[in-house]
Image 1 (spheres, rainbow, N blue to C red):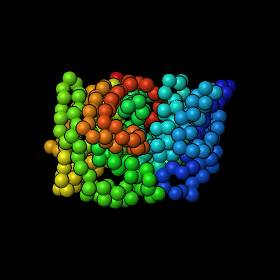
Image 2 (spheres, helix red, strand yellow):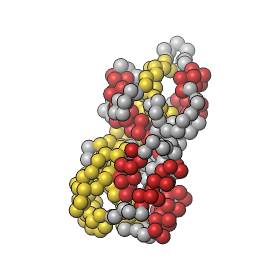
Image 3 (cartoon, rainbow, N blue to C red):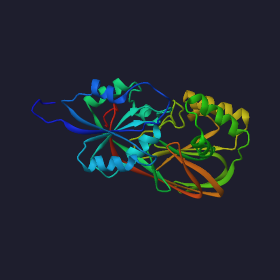
Image 4 (cartoon, helix red, strand yellow):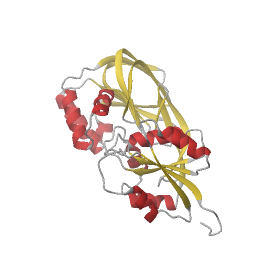
Length: 301
């Protein structure tokens, strides 16, 4: 940056409760690793769930060129929601237990390296999606996905091991529900274990629900998984962690910009891992190039 150019505004929005416990002081890291000739930082803490969208909108309105979510996927979702329709870009300092969007975008999980990325920012526009009006940037889903998100929301434990234990426990009693998925002019009816909508490739923790998903292609990847037993569930788990789910006979994939789901009974659903409630009708839409991010993505051809 030219020495005669004034630093641009960057706002860091911190969720003090995100992810696993850490002794790392984010303000100290920002002081040590951020290029203050490039950026003039402001640090704001969220005070309650749902506070970050308001803070992000206010930061963008106040002239911040970059608004950085410091936290996990829930915090990233909230900050990104607040930036939709603004001229500010999203940055991420991953400090959660899953960090799905950060991992997909190639943002370093080590905070000093993530800050270094901001010092020489490369801006990209990426797609976003919404399920029943709730924005998401990584993944959303109904069925078992949604049930797990509802139970995890009530849990005081975080981290991959706690999540896996919860999944195993809930699987034992979960019942797949009949639903019809309307996609690309076709209606597909079955008892579905999961209907997942992927803007990005993974849930987090490198669990890939749609390894081929491209966050800049104007399409979401829809993964349909019908009723499964314990043996199939183990196979699916292996497929998630090895990117082999794309080649599994248990999963069916489609790409589209809009999809509708009609369920016979109310189903739990989530957006970026956050429990959204229950519904019987779902509309999922993709909005191309609707938000700008700082990330080491390859240039679009």
